[in-house]
Image 1 (cartoon, one colour):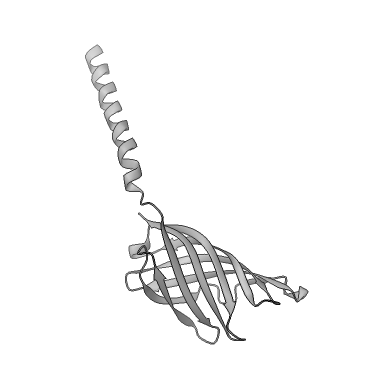
Image 2 (tube, rainbow, N blue to C red):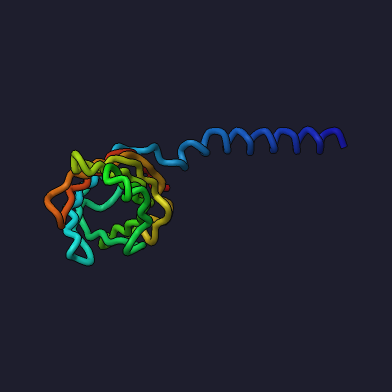
Length: 152
């Protein structure tokens, strides 16, 4: 009986040590990413380019909430925007939740983004970062997303 307990204890210790060693190896380390989107508000979707190797290098992006959620515009100074974005690559899609503040005086939007979900090659995608958008006239904005992503 004592031998069985000892064997079970040794087996359990070996299994736990495997989890400690293999656990971090299973989770991919976040990698720096940059996504650039020229958004023409007259188009249903726009092209994007990305660097960092975690996601595809180019594809299309569209709003998952066409009108988004807008607050604070009555001040004529700043507008708060909460919007979903779907990035489509040839090997899957991923959705970001974006929260920005748009400054009417400067024409600059700043905020944060986070990965909400993904499909196919991006089913395990995780990440977050910041976004800066610069007005390109009344009908367009140049958005630059920077941050880190990992894909299990």
